[in-house]
Image (tube, rainbow, N blue to C red; front, side):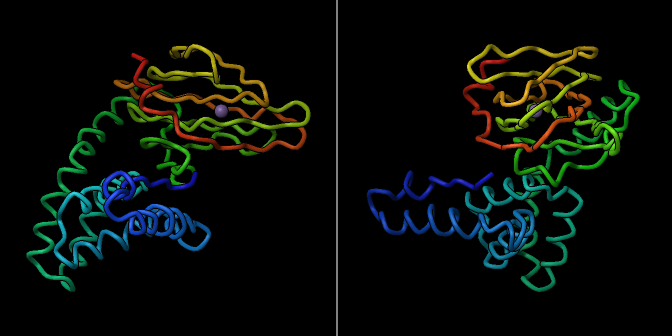
Length: 251
Ligand code: MN
């Protein structure tokens, strides 16, 4: 999913339209989006260290720390990154950066216990951070492959508030996706339809070519097994994130 940035035009569109264009369209629109050259996670790492080196701990630094967390940099990793950079950039700069990083990653200690509680409700493992698909998710998810032959079966776990982008499972015949809900509480929604609340034991049949999303409730972890229904010419098309407005309507 492409990185989209409007901060330049929002803040400086009238005052400095060319700077706003370079910020939104070139820096974020082009450079940040060259994921075939360098991952978003690595770009976040470079950016955070660059800003820290200059002693910048303003709102832009907070933005990039938050983005780094969304791009998969863990609490343990950011601590190691800033510690390493401290020797090259300066000790007081690391102190300043740590104060902000501690706030941005604050929830993650709570997350660890939340995740452990969620695991107790479920026989399938939560698995590893879903880094490969992180760019198609809002919030953090985890992936555990259960079967990779005959029929692909994956346990997908969403942290509270996490959901995947709108997407379509394409196929010329057969295809689509089957969800078996195993723990927590979540949502499934097809484009133009009411969202359906999901609980353990629920089954969702997703036909091919239907635009939809699935994910956790705001206040609950959620896991479903995702089965790839065999078909011809199967592919996934990832679309825009589910907006806070759409998701915000759900309790
Ligand atoms: Mn799906």
